[in-house]
Image 1 (cartoon, one colour):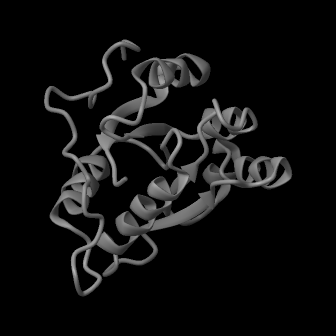
Image 2 (tube, helix red, strand yellow):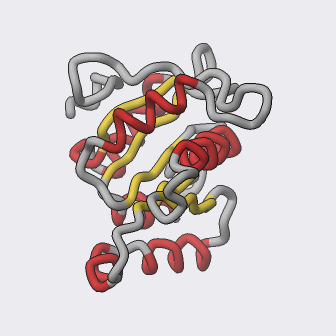
Length: 166
């Protein structure tokens, strides 16, 4: 993916994820659409990176798990926001491809991760994930910051971007 292209890898951008949940606790239509776009792609570990809005990435990660509620072992959320360097390293180790290949189940993991611009320790975690989605905020996320994240982690891991909750 070209670092200047902050869109989904497919021809259409991934839909904006404004309201993560609707009243009653059900995930919004946008989150459901996001899950079905992501579910068809090849990944076992997916990182959500929201520069300057880690809690927004965590809310989306939890909402994605709720979409798969009828099949709870399908997807698990991992919160690595504001984690210590030791915790980030431990999460990266547990979610490493070698560990996951040895695991018998086919559970997928969605990781809410800090931006490597805010926490350089996140680079190691992001480099172990199969795929990364940037969670951007209109009028808040700076395009140069998003481009720098692509450069730090490697643009080949990025599968797209979403407009996330503020």
